[in-house]
Length: 378
Image (cartoon, rainbow, N blue to C red):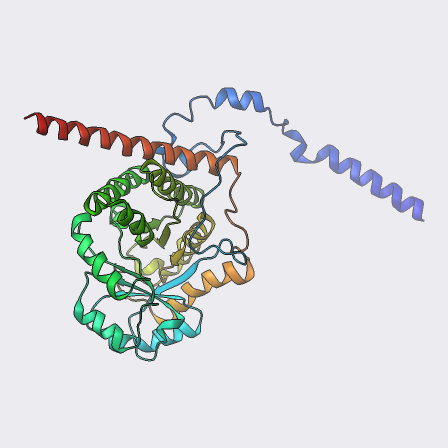
């Protein structure tokens, strides 16, 4: 009986192998593929999404990604779970459910909004110019020199200097400078061009500071914000390129190699209430790209936000938190630094973005220098 079963199994296996439709495909011919794919790498970063070539250069000496601010021995790819919440009760609920960084406007509502919040246990991220009233309110509710987070002003690099100085005097642990890269990305400016603009804005800040010691100190106050789209590999490559761009910019200006804080937020959803549940897909893919790309702080917008700047519902906020909790607590994505490092595709795209961004940045410096020379000759 046993021999009959073995014989039947052997006949069935041979029949399956002969009739398996997958065996009808010829084996992959790499040399033929390379011949047909010639030219795909020309200006690859001018293409978007799936039009980009899905083959990277086989190069074994890609430079390592610079360290992140949130990296540690226990969590080398750690990140801060951030949310902006429009009501005190929802804020307290969010903190209980794992929010680590609170985002809000620097306004007179701080005392009401932060009632019952232990500031020493969280990071606070304020947006708006320095205000004595806001600073005083923070002191009243328990903020001290150890307050963690950021207070990011508005305006150009020169206008930011007084803001940075006042913030540092009262809350020296807060980061206090950024440039509007999120606005550029939302308005469709290409990733490489945005990085070049960040470099020019940083140059303006350094020029305003003037003194080398002040410049080196100011690099510790920088936050780079980034809007993450839905094409995961492109966004991972963009975030990696942004961190490498920062490191290259520091070296170019002979400044200490200081880790930079990168804040990531997923892009706005289509304003269509009939597709509101579909927003969970770009929400998750954006958060995943931000995590794998190595952002230090990540804000996942609730899926039920339809207006820019609006607050999400209690359910939407909870789901947005849980997206990040799953990636950390169940998937363990915080345990490995630069998980996509060494991927031929991601490395190739990363350095294509980086090289194009640096080329645009340096070309802008050349134009600016030429204009200065003409003006001085005149």
